[in-house]
Image 1 (cartoon, rainbow, N blue to C red):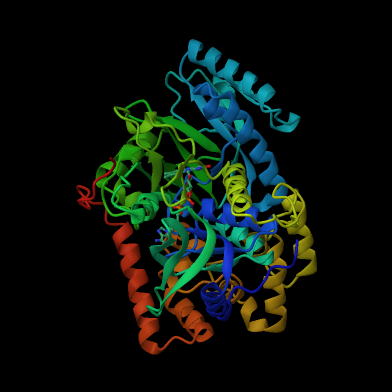
Image 2 (cartoon, protein in one colour):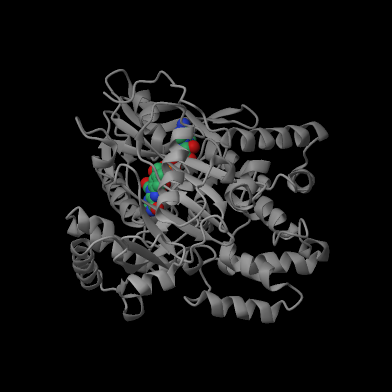
Length: 562
Ligand code: FAD
């Protein structure tokens, strides 16, 4: 793969200029995992690609998932063999392309009776064979004593045993960034804070989009032979720009997660629990924190930063309090939370949990290709199918397709050149940068993979950047500079939430270091004192809002589907 390009605010300005001047083979609307995957696939096929995102990359559903690269076991229960095989294969591919963002982790499914035990055992056995699970990661069935030895905090009464299998944990926001950076390295022209406000049509066919730079309010059009709408929960908003004939098709369901210190739910692995309505939910360890997830309820509120209600939170806290022998959890235990919207296709009469999660492609009257649904796990295959359609459309328009420059299943993502053994790469990193503390090195590799070498390089050229942002944190100043220079971070929230994860994983949501980080970003981005203050206030308000669990969801008044 070509080296990681700089994606700074200067790059952004230059990209906006290029977007306004050139004609592209493909314009992608939306910088979530779907848009990023489509852009990367298309650019590797030699196409000229533009991607615009209205806020920050991955700000929508793609930074609000359960952060699992599913092996596909859940699709076995639904009898969807095709999806089992696709998910299992994609998990293998992702572990090759970006090992630090697909880390195998054991998932423990406690079982409370002999017949349930037999059922799970049969399902895991079948899955291991179907998905060609490697020997070291085959399932295990544990008896009661073995289960309690593995997860001693589980409630022992009526526990029969457990099934154990491997899932892979990811960092969803960073997976999007590394996919986009890989696309940019191959020539895709990408910009955040660039919102599509209109579709441009000629003779009834879509030939581009009108874009507003939301940082300056400047407007310009971007010409594209084919336009793909990968706007996630906003897919309908873009579709209806085609004209009055287009009706809403999406059915949005909301899933929330709650974060708390691991001392409150002391688990060593992902553990499945049963909620009051018998839905499976889970607790996932993350450093010295854990997160509980997830819910699945109809949603009609605002799409940006969806509302979290006290009932959503209680649903998860109650499930964990019932599964573990712990002091009952309360909202005061929650240090953070997030909510995401599943952009599913409406199916009449179905409850949220019954609606298909398969991706769906809709081709509109103007030729706009819209995609909704799907999973992080299978984004690469979904992108491949979309770009096949794009290529066919270009051929119909008389274009000769250029030769491809790489394969999406072999070329690593940005940061993916670590080799599959992340622990070994971390040790090598420590040997090469002995001045760095072990926790700093581990953090760099876990978040940035082989791009940690660029960050260590920044520390080498400016030694003050090797210092921690605060004594209790492993975050260094070099990460802030890296985010601004290489990952197009434009606001304090961009860094705190989606690039460095302090918003989620620091028990004070990074509020302690936010003023200093705002100052560092401000210097790099040329912010005035007023802008710096505004960034800080917006961030403080964002943290406060996410942690204010509402008694009921305010409705947006928007119609949900046709
Ligand atoms: P999004 O990520 O929402 O991206 C759409 C983007 O379009 C947004 O960034 C938005 O700002 C932008 N946009 C909108 N309008 C415009 C405009 N006018 N101009 C420019 N840009 C625009 N999948 C898994 O594989 N594993 C999991 O563990 C998992 N857990 C999940 C848990 C929950 C609670 C949810 C909700 C989903 C989960 N998923 C999971 C599914 C997965 O997260 C989604 O399928 C995926 O993130 C959807 O990505 P997307 O790019 O289509 O949408």
